[in-house]
Amino acid sequence: MRQVVTGIIGISLLILASASLSGCVEVNVGFEPRDYTLRPSEVPPSGAECALSGLVNRRQNTDAWCWAASSQMVMEYLNNIASPQLPPLPKSLGTENGQCQLVNAIFDTDLRHREINTDLSLSCCKADRITNPHPDNNDPNVTESRNICVQNRWPDDVFNHPDYHHEFTPVPYSDFQFDRYSHHFAIERLTWQKLKDEICQNRPFIFVVQWSGGGRDTSVVGGYRELPNVGESVEVHDHLYTDDDFFVMPYWAFLGVPGDFTHDLDYVNIHR
Image (cartoon, rainbow, N blue to C red):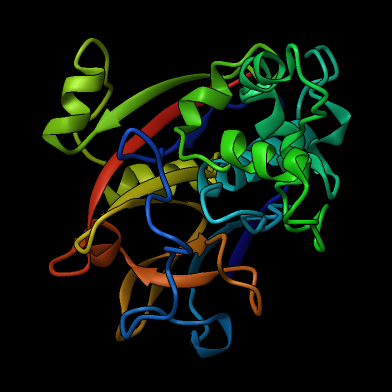
């Protein structure tokens, strides 16, 4: 029987972050269909499942904003089930311009610094292909906004920002990430049991991969399945998928596929 988690108060959240000093280093890099992934319609019924209800899939609105799309998905989910005693997050988070407003907060100092002694009016929403689908490419306000805002970052930048502040504990897999986070990490890898516990305790998470061809990428896991002929599998909400809200990936592939990608970093215990 499929178990659907609808929300609890005072939760922690597990996230796996983006990397290369940032995520989305390559243009439109994401989990486009692979021979080891399944769409929901291709998944046979299973007796062991758990998924989060209300996790909204968000596309990245520029080629460099996978880190923002994944963070937005996570924070929206947490915000919707948060205790009323918690301070509210920006109301724009769940709206069409929520992603560019999030990125705007991260780059606000750079935007304001560039406006000094100029007539420019800059905003990351002018670089967003959803909120500004037909930009004037000759407009310096648009081009300068892109130059500043369309950049790779880590989910750390979002969760450390005062407007969106969340606590987290990173779990590094690679030597690079161990160097970044050697001062505190919880576990050395996300075991299948730990993954199941996170989902069924209402904690979605972001994971980071490093592509064999270069670049890194973030995606959000919102469920798990134990499938006949496939075995242990995870539901992945990816910023490039549009036809379905998620796809299903075997757990062995989640840990890394030689020649395709390596698993890079997890952030656990993310909470407000």
